[in-house]
Image 1 (spheres, rainbow, N blue to C red):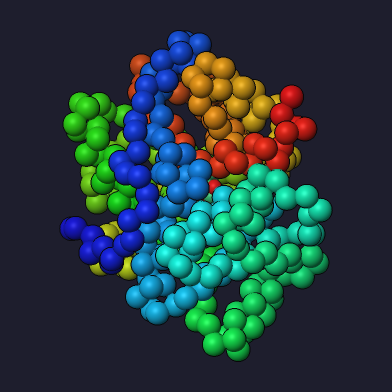
Image 2: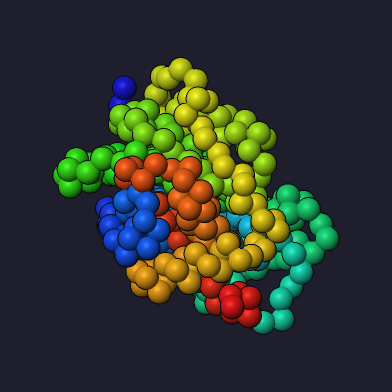
Amino acid sequence: MNPNYPSRISIAHLPTPIEPLEKLSEFLGGPEIFIKRDDQTGLAFGGNKTRKLEFLVADALAKDCDHLVTSGDLQSNHCRQTAAAAARYGLGCSLIIRGEPQSSLNGNLLLDKILGANLYWSRDQSTSEIISNVNSELRSSRLHPYLIPRGGSNAIGAAGYVLAMQEFMAQVEQQQLTFDTIIFASSSGGTQAGLILGAKVYGYNGRMIGMSIEHPANEFKARIAALTIATASHLGVETESLSEMIEINDNYLGGGYGVIGETERESIRTLAQLEGILLDPVYTGRAMGGLIDLIRGKDLHSRQRILFWHTGGTPALFAYQNELF
Ligand SMILES: *Cc1c(COP(=O)(O)O)cnc(C)c1O
């Protein structure tokens, strides 16, 4: 059954390329590895949130909203892409950043500021409290705020990754490729939920491994299952439970969210120096580090073909300059 997609704005450079990582494959002596470049979606340094924002911003415009409000951690890529999308569509943007005010703005925070977003710091309050305060302030100034959840991960945003799976299937057909496994960083769950529903709708039958960035697999799985169902319903797709398609690997949580370790450092250097491709310290460095470890441990068959779905995040590298070596 075909999804009934709501209207979307067109801000992403699509389709993003699929490229072979020949030197990395040779270096690891295992499966053939390819990469899908969603770090190149084109909106202010790109990343996976751009695909979600195509639907979220269209929804905001349809509801006559004039101001985007969202939240994230210090180096949130979602906040940066939301600020860029707001600028492009002439909308205001308020970002609630978890933590203490920073004396110098670096990486994504610097870009948020350049893109003209208002920054609020949660300090010791909960972000939801501040979101609701900011929301009422905006309303009392006669503005119409549109609230986007953390990571853009609701049914509206996740639709961007259902559509991404259609794009992927068209590319593999055209390039006469087949993939056994797709691996990507998974954190607020919208990317994984969208890809799973997309796989069901467009007939991708391989494995999909979400490399968990912050959550233990069990609780995360339940959240993704719920989001998958909500997204199916939003798009008018009837489907039985997709739980059996949700695979999460939580073996690489390391020191926790945003804490860089040797796994991330090594994978960032390896991709940069073998392929000239930049990963990020929080998400893709961790996911690629996990992939490299799975190949070394022979958990992935050497006759397989694997796709690493790059989800962006590279501006955060600059904020981690003292922790990368
Ligand atoms: C947000 C983000 C992810 C995780 O995507 P979710 O849809 O939140 O699971 C992965 N990589 C990067 C670079 C991100 O910014």
